[in-house]
Image (cartoon, rainbow, N blue to C red; front, side, top):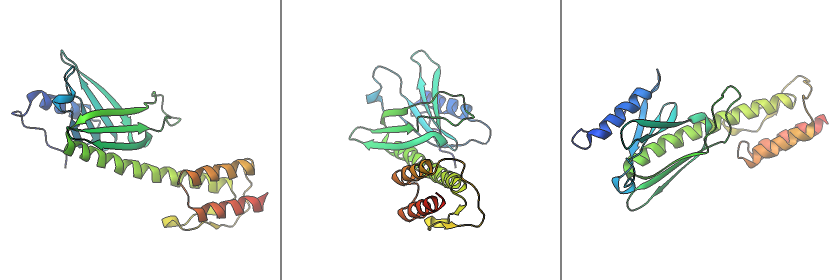
Length: 209
């Protein structure tokens, strides 16, 4: 269920901001959660709104004399989500991986940070971002394992993080064994594979050298 629009008695301008946010959604995209900056943190500018949808994170800056300036980050580009809750508000920072996929021509955004958000709202956006971060991290892990398996002569990875097993067939390596071994080390350091998976990959690569 999409989050409800705040009552007009609260702030009619925020109602307009959320309505504008909904107007930005593409077909099939839904609003999951949003958070509004507290007035204390918006003395020199109008309050910022940040939202999590099913496809991206959107931050909306409202102009002093009207209008809106949205900035967004796709969930597949997210690197990490951080939330710091203080006495007067919560600071939410979403960092990107610093690179886009090959099919994208968009400029990479380093991070989207919003200070002084309403705490409960910020926690809802943070939970949505954390869920997306974990989901895409697992998707990248599976993709990288598949690529490494193809380059290492058919290593089969079991579900649930079980150790890989060798499959039949004598596919030839498409690149240098040392490069594949270095890639496996990077995946281990990044938490994409377990120690047992790394050892099995290393043994397979060395065996084919």
